[in-house]
Image 1 (cartoon, rainbow, N blue to C red):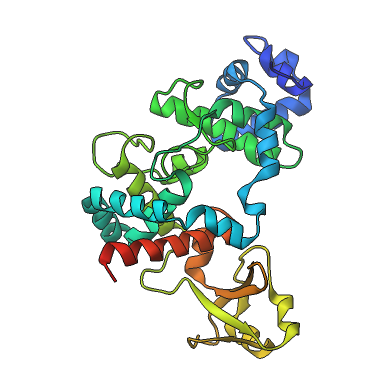
Image 2 (cartoon, helix red, strand yellow):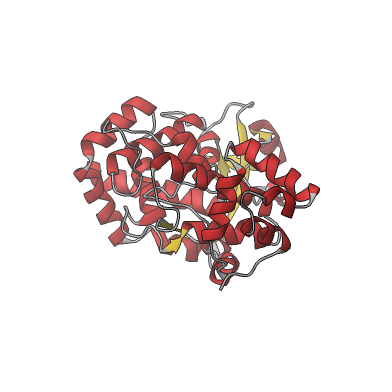
Length: 323
């Protein structure tokens, strides 16, 4: 059953006389949203009329996998089944993956790993109605309504662009969709028609999903052939002050080195880096994240996620190439 705020109610009553039902402040907010996303207000109000509030969406935000310690999180993704099915996916789409690697300068192993972590190679793309998820988060999330209100509007734009029925598309509780779980803004910005059939279909077209993930990584600065992370040792406890929950690359390697951090491979003094800590049952791992690790966190900000993608990509490549 839909639960409606005064703001949402004013949208529901919107029609030819919608402007008269909104306060000046609410109209201003909606105008900004409409201008930023170029979605007409009438389309936004029609979308709200079709949306339903879902408490399950808000509940899902409280139990994300990224709240687990690393050793538990890793066990979710670094499984024999996920690796084997990833290699099978790679072989089935080897031509598209090789072309994506050449075109966008992103390793096939990383592309496959993203699709593997996100949706088990398209087998689990989510069963939440995207419209309902984004409506709920846009109007009822306690802290992230600015972000999700834009995604709600972008979904309306995307559905109109693609000719979708707003109410039938399904995805994650956060409104991500398709094999690579793109948010609406990312779908609009980075999805590509990689097989040239005239559609950008990330739900049922593996070629488009592969090309779109590769394009996303390319546009966010992936450096082909460069390392992702370096294993690190802490020789001075004071160096732990550099550990961050988010990868930001605000330090240069010389700073971490002087603080008492060592890596097996030498790094140039000016290399942008970030120090991350990953929990094992009885100890902590330390890693120096580099540009490509940071790029993975543009997909999901959690260092756990980025490390899982990296580790899975390495396991996939080892099995695919047989070494």
